[in-house]
Each structure stands twice: as structure tokens, then as C-alpha cells.
Image (cartoon, rainbow, N blue to C red; front, top):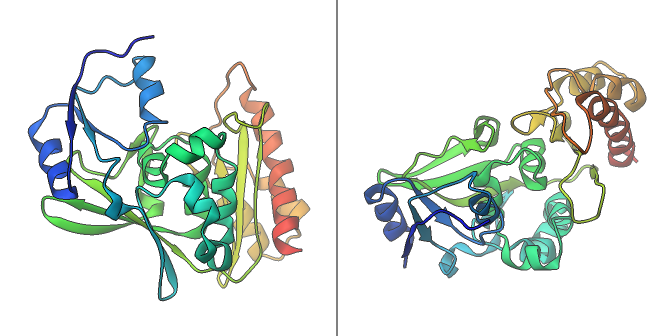
Length: 272
């Protein structure tokens, strides 16, 4: 389909983008466009103005910052996947980025765009939830940091204000085991279900893809593991507190059972 009519503004800086968001009704940011443009073609999204920030090179970087690694919001998935800093310090992020879509998507799509879009079927949001990442947003009042656990608020909705720009993602360096698994009909498809598992000093963290309106923390699994359960036993609680969708690719019941299988495998891989 053809998108509804919209105005177009190209921002030359983050400050210009913030000003444009505040002065145009129903404005949306455009980065790589691989999340927003398909939604516009289906007219699920109908922004009045597109504010293009795709050329802001100062938001494309990966750099170490103490016990964290900072990732600029406009860093392409391809560059996240190939980052030596992430492969050494937080490999689950680089690995998950390598699983996104196909090469064309990875060379154009950005990590910040994917996270800000808030799609529960996307790969990176659940990985960031499992890691306990921090999201940095910049608006008219300055910069603030949002804990990822409170960032995704509902389907395609986040804690970003309408006039804020997601500028950076901060992930902790990890030393324990990890795993990211997803089940798809075809390699480039959205995951029917996905699992991100990370071993941290406070215990295992597990997050689920496409099991609710937002990325879901598998609290029941984490609680079982903390009580001494083995992965096979803990994985039986994978669907607690979830609300998976039913669609032409799989029913909610199928996704619930699939989540248990994938959580078991992910935990076994992370703990190996």
C-alpha cells in the first residue's frame, strides 16, 4: 500500500530533531526506516511529519565506558554485530544483532530505531531486558537515563516523551554464560518465540520475545533457578505471567509450550 501523506524534515543535529518533534503535530523520527516505513505502508502508523535523523553520524558508535559499553542509537545492526568491543565485553548483543532480518535490513536498520519502535517480536528489546540495560534519552530539558525494565510500556509504546530522542543504549559488560535462541518459520522472519538468557552475579536473567505486549521477563524461571531448580524444571514456568498472541503462525497455547522448550535449551547453553 501507499503511505498516507506526510511532511518531511531532515534534522542536522539532535537539538534540531527535538525542536522539530515539538513544533510539528504527530511527528515521528525516521532512522533506518525498517520498522516505521512498513507500518506506514500498511497505514498502521500515520505520522503527520517524518523527522529524518538518519544522517547524524555522531550517534553512530560503540565504545567502552567503565563497566558498560555505550552504543549510539544510530549504530546499524551490521556494525553492532561486528563490534569487537561488544564481542569481547557483551557478546549476546553482537550475536543477536547478527540474527536480525537479512543483510539489507542489518545494513540499514539501527539499534535505537528497533528499541524505540517497541515491537515485542523484535530481537534486541528482550536481549536488553535480560541484560538490565539503560536507555539514554535527550529532550528539551536535557538528558535522562531510563532503566530498561520501565522503558517498554505497551504494544509499540515506550517511556520516551513525544519530543525526546533516544540517543544511547548502555549495556553492562558480562563475564558469565549467555544464550539467545529464537524459533522462526524462515530465517528472516519475526520470531514466533525467542529467549535471551544471561548469567550474572545476581543469578540468571531470562527475557522472552513475542510472549506479550512488551518484552517479558521470565520471573518464574528466575525464581525457580534461584531456589536451586535445574534448567528442565525451571523452564516449565517460562509462560507464567505471559500473554502470547494467537495468529496465523501459531496459537497462544503453541507459543506457551514453545517458550518452555526454548528456555530449557537457552539455560542449558548459557550454563554449559
